[in-house]
Length: 106
Image (cartoon, rainbow, N blue to C red; front, side):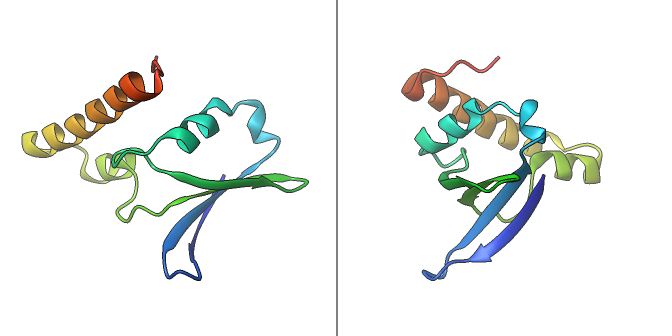
């Protein structure tokens, strides 16, 4: 899995995620469908996807700041206020997926 950030002709930053097709044996393509349908502040939006002979490419919104896991790994532990903030975002995103898109996260 590789990531790249690109400036579009409309001066917007987008993230390009490209996956080796061999990796896709373990990758759930349902994620693509969810990301295409979702339109919510706490769910990354998938703009386009395309495939080459060896890779699958996802063009998504660029979110400055990185992943939650990276922050947790760096800090080791969050203070209570930070924990509540991130927990609330995750709960709201899951609620949106469940209520609006009828997706149940296991």
